[in-house]
Amino acid sequence: MTDPVAVPPAAVPLAVPLPPTRTPQRALATEAVHAGRDDLARLGVHAAPIDLSTTYPSYDTREEAARIDEFAATGARPDGPPVYARLDNPTTARFETALARLEGTESAVAFASGMAALTAVLLVRSGTGLRHVVAVRPLYGCSDHLLTAGLLGTEVTWTDPAGIADAIRPDTGLVMVETPANPTLAEVDIAAVAHSCGSIPLLVDNTFATPVLQRPVEHGARLVLHSATKYLGGHGDVLGGVVACDEEFARKLRQVRFATGGVLHPMAGYLLLRGLSTLPVRVRAASATAADLARRLATDPRIARVHYPAIGGAMVSFEVYGDPHEVIAGVRLITPAVSLGSVDSLIQHPASISHRIVPEGDRRSAGVSDRLLRMSVGLEDVEDLWRDLTEALSARPGREARSPESRTEPRSAPAASPSAGR
Ligand SMILES: *Cc1c(COP(=O)(O)O)cnc(C)c1O
Image 1 (cartoon, rainbow, N blue to C red):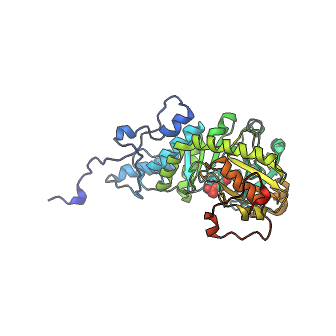
Image 2: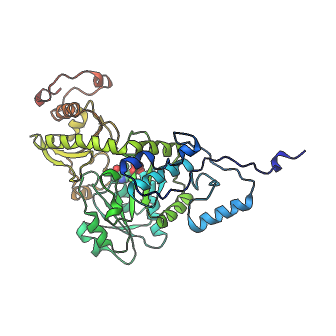
Image 3: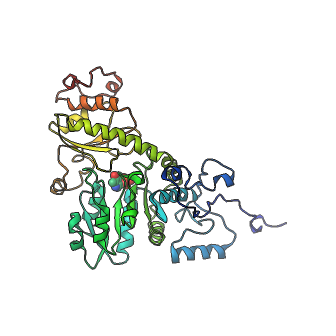
């Protein structure tokens, strides 16, 4: 009788995706539904399999040792089973492959959140002794905080795009911009900034534009960051982050991810892959509605200023003459919540919420007025959104407090008569 444990392994059928194929690049809409799924028909399935394994059995310890050595030396995705889930995951890898195709990069590395992704980039650079970062405000509030507080031992110089070349020092490891920026939607000329960076890697946070509207590597960026929590996921039900870049940088990011553990859960990887398949249609539809709302707001006497990017997009920011808190309290269809990029519309007050962590003076000088509201436009009908917005804009202090029940009450005030809002 043989000891069952000593039985040599039978060929283990593993649903490991094949390495990214080198097919010529297909159109974005096609990649959105096919990239990361090219092997599914051969596997005999239609939906991507979800591999929840935390560990991977192997009877061949020598081979496992070689796999571990190879990853430690190169950071390349392991050939065959990943040994342990912190090293790699086949489901998450499908999302990485797909996002890389959409951004037009060799590789992408996914993380537990956008902030975990930014952390990994900063650690890769400071790990080589290049601790200085040059950055342009505004950035997402927590990105600003991470750089300003120096939590990771980095030092930041804030500048405007024209000042980047002068701000670069011998120990500068990274230049970071966000365009359109959160929350003012200010735009940066990526090609001009990339030129100023010389050989220093330029990181562009592309969360707001998505690869549907802008592919930063085509303009000279080396690293593209996403809070996948926003448009890539698209349904407000998954937290994730990703960096799209060349394979050389991706290898360093994978080693940092393995060492620090900010991995994306495979279920989140699955949801993000699914989100990508509708990304182009969601972004185009929501952008058309957002552009329409921006036009209406621009001629509304209650609005002091509208911010809407030249490249388009589904975010609209606007400054009100009245009390921004009353507008937030007055919405019924639009959800008053931080975050963005979901199928439903959200609105928030950056000075109170998303950019609260940025010191008041820095916030104001970055153009984040206390009267600024930031709206993430979803897939609702434009007339319904406009009615809700225009009624909320007419809200006055002392207006009936919102209660959960009042959300379901039909509203009768016509859009054309803002003073009737109640
Ligand atoms: C939300 C956001 C982040 C942070 O991403 P998380 O997934 O919340 O960690 C980074 N950049 C931008 C532009 C964001 O909107």
